[in-house]
Image (cartoon, one colour):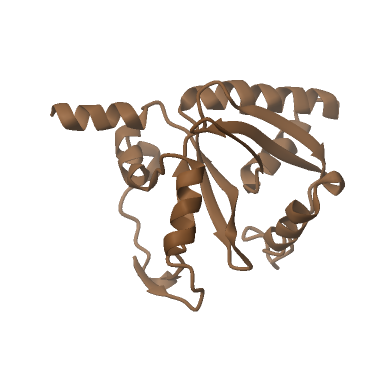
Length: 203
């Protein structure tokens, strides 16, 4: 794959040259260790440290690990979100679906989903701007009768089950908001990256 720097001034912003993409190996057969080795170098010690890097170097992308046991999954009606989250959501949902022909705008969600957590001992609250959580809500609507039941099942998944798999949050900024970090993805793995570091020291 070949990438080229685009006009976005953020240092991690590159454009992928589509014709250069080649399939090397299916991600489904990669071991947890192989996957973690790909993203482990980008883990910051805390969100505060990531903000410090952003201030000093304009860093716009990083990965953090919430403190164990601190995750709380929260749900609210999307139109009750604060002004900043609404503004960011407006930018996120301007993108279009890549699986429909012709392309159609992504449907506006009814609910906003949040993580309240601590990282490095400091409390944080972030709306999850990852389409995965909205897709989970849509999928659960096919299996459960009421929205209360859906939200109960999602809370169990995102507050209890997923954090047990070494949950890490992918944090990124947007071009229009280069100093504001938002949750753009969730990483989980059966292998603790810190244990991988210890193994590297031993072997």
